Amino acid sequence: MEKGLLLVNTGNGKGKTTAALGLVMRALGHGFRVCVIQFIKGISTSGELLAAKRFEDLLDVHVMGRGFTWTSKNLEQDKKIAAEAWQFAHKVLLSDDYKLVVLDELTYLMKYRFVNSTEIIEGLQQRRKDLCVVVTGRDAPQVLIEAADLVTDMREIKHPFKQGVKAQRGVEF
Image (cartoon, rainbow, N blue to C red; front, side, top):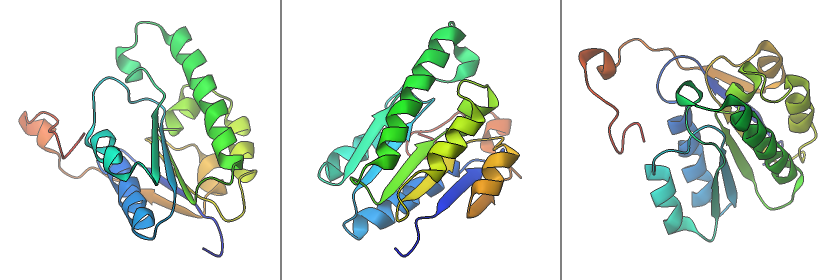
């Protein structure tokens, strides 16, 4: 890698985390060490957590959240956990341990003002020059879009949920 890129997967459609996990697989295929930090997810075991056990020597996955914010019973506790997760992520961004870091659903910390957006942008800009970072989540703020090297907007056109099909193992989680 000549330049560590900042990639943002945003939008209201499915596939933001899935696309990031595709990059994880590519990096692992090249023997690169990868870290995935999930800021919101935390209620159920996802396929990516199960798969991570197969790549223990190269892949670290940290589930730092307590679940989706719209089901929260204690937003103040969620804010505290989010701030701690960001501090952990910032240390990872400054370390020499990884070639790729995925900050899954980081945009929600900015949207809900759990962590100051300026602090997050500054932390992303302080990363090693060769470190690639993928940020996922809906409603990426303009300041993140401007800081990014690549932004993909996942737009929902059709989704099975609207026909009553619930989230499925191996597809959504």
